[in-house]
Amino acid sequence: MLCSSAFFPHHRHSLHLLTSTTRLLRQGIPSRLVIFPDENHWVLNHGNSLKWHYEVFRWFDKFVGEGRKKDASQRLK
Image (tube, rainbow, N blue to C red; front, side, top):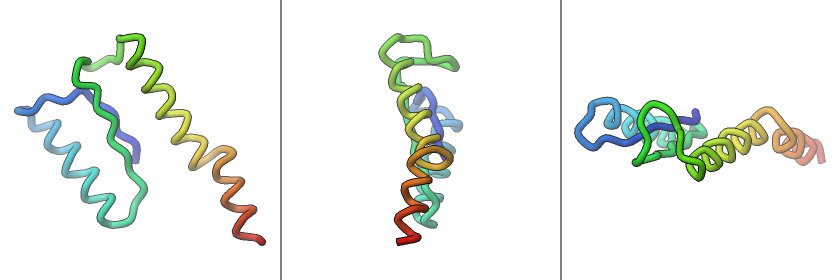
């Protein structure tokens, strides 16, 4: 599960993201939490937008794209 969010230390939403991601990782489920502390609901900063797109496309590549094909071909060998 890929989660991205702003981080507000005193908000329940931020605590839920941290605990959910930790729980999934402990269960062996691939998870990644990307935090943008200077954003709100939308990622508007240019640098943060580039990072967000990088993370999303890397995640897609790993689980549905070329990365998955490489893993499958290695298992067949």
